[in-house]
Image 1 (cartoon, rainbow, N blue to C red):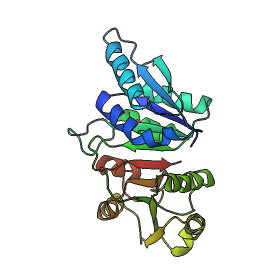
Image 2 (spheres, one colour; image 1 turned 180 degrees about the vertical axis):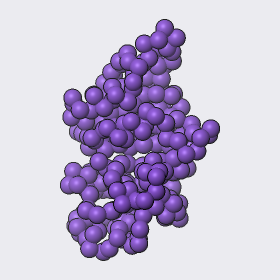
Image 3 (tube, rainbow, N blue to C red; image 1 turned 30 degrees about the vertical axis):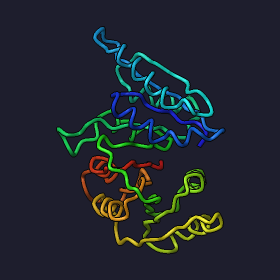
Image 4 (spheres, helix red, strand yellow; image 1 turned 45 degrees about the vertical axis):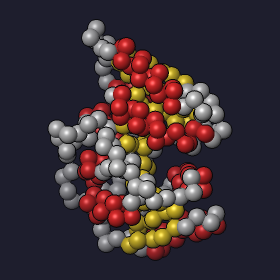
Length: 246
């Protein structure tokens, strides 16, 4: 991963997200841009945004490269973030979800719009983080294997952070390519077969194995009959980070 965009919002969730991606910024070829979108209203808390940016910068004092900062004045943060990613070549957008205590089924309108319109991978951090302690990630597979850039990045992260992988696939054939590539790099990968995907069975497996984060395709629910998109439901319920592969 070479260029990461961190969406700056609510202070607590932004700082939590920054801490999650901090290990990636120690790599020499990785750069970070902090992007804050401030409402044009005269009541907009500019001082709070400035304070949050300063706190986030302090987290990355050991980064190979000092983060860049973008501040835009607009009423639609999701549109601005998607516009920035479409005009510049980012490899990942990191977002912290707001506190969902009032509505457990909601992921927020800004996150929903970014999910629907962003064309780069999204790394989304829940407001209440109960991250697994085992050195494993859960890769959900539905249909084709992960796209080559995402597969390469997952392998690189497993190597860099000494992580193992659990491949949640419909068959051994589906996971064969990724398992083979990981084996060549001495990454331990285990395939768990599913007979159909749902947010609940993905979360149950992630909690049982106490994984660090979940990787899921954005279109994983294309055959899901539920009126609630699987990815939305997963984000609304998950207590560990979720990487969404477009």
